[in-house]
Length: 505
Image 1 (cartoon, rainbow, N blue to C red):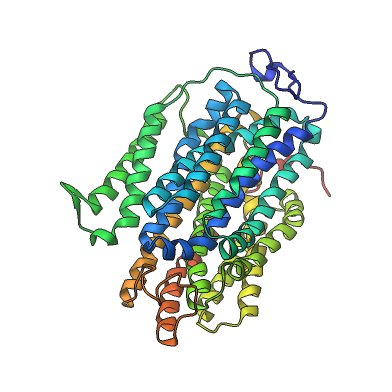
Image 2: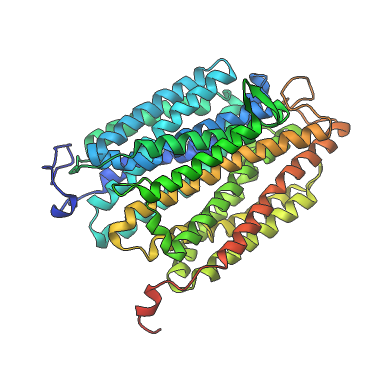
């Protein structure tokens, strides 16, 4: 076994060596810091969106690509980057991803136009895709099985804290320094994570893998065609784009390519990107469908809410970030208690109430949303939304892999994380389409141009605040609809197999 100074472990099958470390906590902290940076970056952007719209004079359809480009560049390589870590070493891939992510963050902050920012975010997403799978792989291999629980708890706590820190830190930075600093802040954090990783994370054994590059091409091209067609459809009036390409042909091509991808995965007998045999387990299949709806819902919710808070109410970025804080606090506070219930109760009894509570909370918020909605009402509904979320994120993750044999756990986690990111990509695309459509329907501008445009930093006059709020509320109906689908899906969970063998209580 290698030491914490980075000495290389002899090559060979990972199961043939004891790779656990006597003191793995310094390595964990290095990995958690990098992971924390990724999670904060995912939540920090929402609060800066109105400022980006105003400063770069961008439209809603353009600025949503700042998120979509990142998510697409993240999700497409995710199916193969875990195996790249097995082949070349998770430490090495983590370091490469960390450098790419940090440098791309600097590019984002220096971007002088919306096109440059979108390109930089795509590179940033690639860095995140290189980092993310390696973190769990290293933790699983360096912690003895009987000490892995606290490490995983620390890991989950980092994600929970990041969802709270992101909007608050983003609000502070945008308000006092400018939106560019939500990206510049990654430079010192990335530098510290780089030093800690070099010092504390060991090189682990590597082994050969085959890489399904045809599958990557089919999946990547299909996802891009589908998302571009959905997100940019209204820009081209759902008609001609260029040459023989139309919006509907592009969407159709995306769906066909994704169908061919699934067919190819069923025929690939080597190492398919998507091991379809995993879906024979009913709970795994249901959990993947459910987490896609959760990720879709939570991703599509933030964009209209931040535009409402800053453009209609005239709140500053920090105050707008505080609007989301109760949701993160509730999810963090409830995570441990819900985790205990997940081990004891049928997953349907934990997850379905979570969907129901989130569905009711969001429905009430959409109904009561006006230019003068009481702040305490919005905060209370965000808190109950967070309680519902606590019954979804952790329990779905635990249930997805519960019935899978240990040698399929890695593949299962890769598929599950990819499904989660697909939900986020589609949520980002569909809410952009719907929001742009509702703004047009009300005869409202969808850019930051003009004193009364989006992101002006001042409360709108009443004659504009009402129609804008109606448009935002109509777009937000997307969230309870998706959560309703998730609720129906959650009712399909079956009793986990380990329940049959556990001792009677």
